[in-house]
Amino acid sequence: MLVEFLSSETAAYAGGGAAAFGLVLFLVSFIGGKRPAGAVKDDQIDRSSASNTISETDFLSAAPPTPGPPPPVAPEPIAAATSPVSRSATAQRVFDLTEIRSALEVYRSANGAYPKSNGWQGYGSAYCATLGDKWIRGLVPDFIAALPRDPSRSEHGDKSQYLYFSDGANFKLLAHETDDYDPAGAVSDVEPDPLRPNDFGYWTEGGVSF
Image (cartoon, rainbow, N blue to C red; front, side):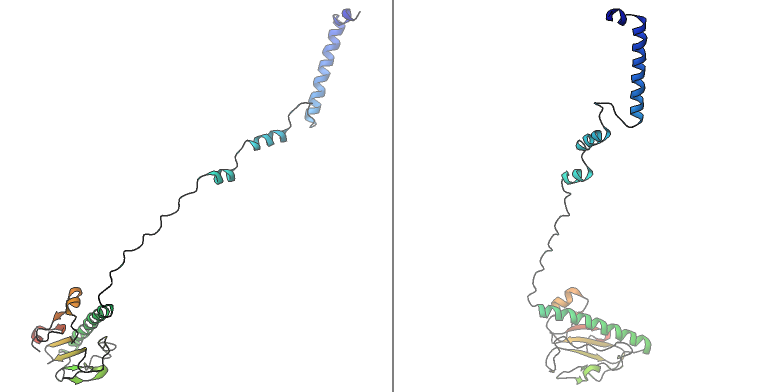
């Protein structure tokens, strides 16, 4: 009987209706958010994908570090001068004489002549007029703020001083009794005084014999 029923048109019709009904139930459960048994859930897929994905943070931490800038190169040591004090004094003398010479030229342009001197003049000297801070008359304050002194700051006439001589038409300006022309001449256009072996400075063509 069972075999005859299963092979009959009635059984075929009943089986088709059952299959259709089962399909309807599957669709209703899927649309309603229910998954058939054995279906893989979305969050399981997400977790699985996340476990197989390298995050940006993990990638950056795993990347080799970027090399930093090379260490600075130490400068070559400057050779020590035989006498740092004398070297500094020489540079200061060159600077001072250059400034005074410039002031003298500006004075001459404004007045038609250089400031006249009463023989040799200086801040202090054993054989010339000792005039202190205004050892060249007429320059301060209009042409130079202040007249410099030799960096030795000597108060004694027989020591290093700046000296000035002028007849108005020519002048001679010296760093007197310094004995450092060689380093001074190496870095500037100062000249050794042909009349005084320990002096150097600036002068006009007509003042070379002063």
